[in-house]
Image (cartoon, rainbow, N blue to C red):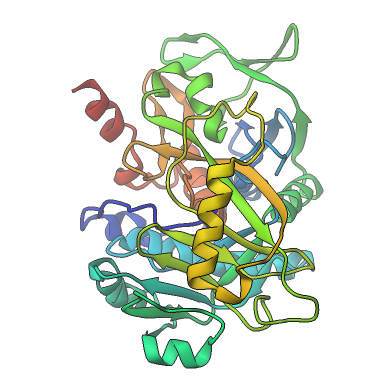
Length: 409
């Protein structure tokens, strides 16, 4: 899943805080930095473990059900990668850096993970978000076109651009293979010397500002110098003090079948698209012989990611069909061929979290990926590894203080 999510603007200092992660990691030699346990093998945790390993740490990666599993926020087939983020400079630059890193690593692994279809961002009546994005895209070196509705209609006649003011088109963006990407990161991690175990984790006691190990399975305790908890929608269960500021919500995704032999709604002729009007829908064209993917960005009800039944609702399907009739009229009668229920893992201000546990200096908390975190995995891995190893502090805007302070008011 990947959407705007109506994010609040960052402070101007966000560009300074994130700039070091845009041009690439600093050139330095790192010796063995001690041991790290990373909990969670999704986009944030898997990349954090791999980056820590590459910087000289001894790393153990743990996950309850495995990377990209069906309960995980990083599960499923595909995710969007794009750089349009309104006024939020840090995410635009992170997305540009992340795309570079995805491409570098897929070449290193000889495995296709990124698919360049372009991303079409359709603008509603209020275009302030998109106008703020344009100079930041230029500054980040992201190629884009500002396209009139008339020109959009000529280029993509299969789309009805009714009520669309204009569009941003990022020709070098597209989508990522999600589950395959998680598996690829784990495979690289193991080949490069990391240790992985599938296990349920319980945090240990905290004493003298330090966590005293973690428990896995009955009666087994693991110890390390540092602990990274990147367990997505489970963060509020692992650390109850986070429950009020990390809320997993139910999100439904639909795949509609295209007509036999018709390429108009596949990635051969249609880009990834995001419709930033009301309601906000987004989608990925048919690919790898699967259906036309689309979803509503509206937050669903709170979900328990462990026990929830993953069945779509009649209401959600009806809303998806209504949107399909409006924006892609030739698909109006298309059958539903597949569906998925996953979750967003929102922080209360919709921004990422990367900070120490407030009571344990050897524990780092990473999360808040919401509906747009997957693409940023490689860059978050850089930030996490630099923070844990004391190389560079993470962006202040990802600190826990902003959330805990608001929650206590």
